[in-house]
Image (cartoon, rainbow, N blue to C red; front, top):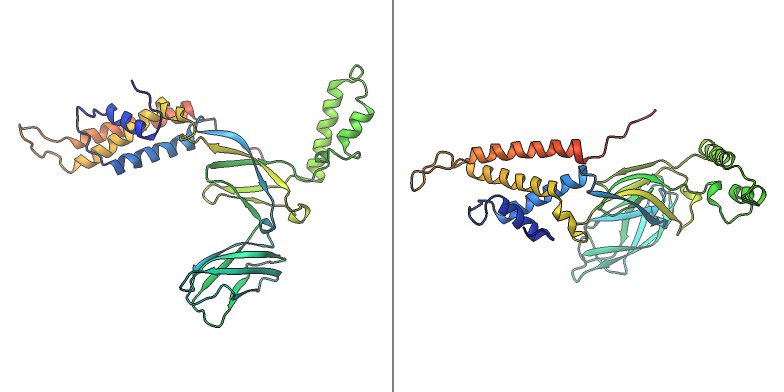
Length: 324
């Protein structure tokens, strides 16, 4: 058996499992690709080997702040605009936003570059273009308050503490520094349980009096909203996120050799095969044979459901409990 090592060999492996080339599998190449995509999505969403835990860092820039303009959308580029036309941001209560436009040969606005994202906006400001010739452009803005993450991140479960006393490790006033200076001068006299309990109490004090920044995330927006005082975070500070990201089979080819994924994708292709043939039910062929697409379809559905039950009961991580 040739073990699949890429998408093309995986497709052919699944088709051979259905009888190719001895039997003609009546499924278009586009439909096979759809089945591979659906199988991979299910694998990423539920199989514990489909994602891995990672730490993702994102540098804070001026547009990440909730009172600054994160970006804009060119709903209509208009006509006859010039690169020298002036952008004016009005409304929303903020100030200092500036930008310039880039146009093509017809004066259609193709992009906008910010020279200053502004500050103090409570609402997304309106955009006006001061021009002598252009018309028809519609540009909308959006405020920050979040950081963008790559599309391969499926979950963001935590964020490293920002600006807590325990984080200032380079300061002589840091609690850990003082403990090490006064109590850990010799490791022969320290009682580890006491030290551990003290550290736990310090963490509890910070949790109560400082708190931890809440985060909100939806993988379909690729945005992590951090509910905090963004003024306490300087530009170029890194936010460290605890995430789960998808395993990319193009980089890690062993994904294609996963037995559950192979069987599941095969069942999806078989289901599509049965769907294609169902309309020819009881249609006589040369030699008196008849198509039985319904049977192929029913078998595939039963196999798919059994594999999904195996996925949820065997290959998925347990559902985390909730306390509150």
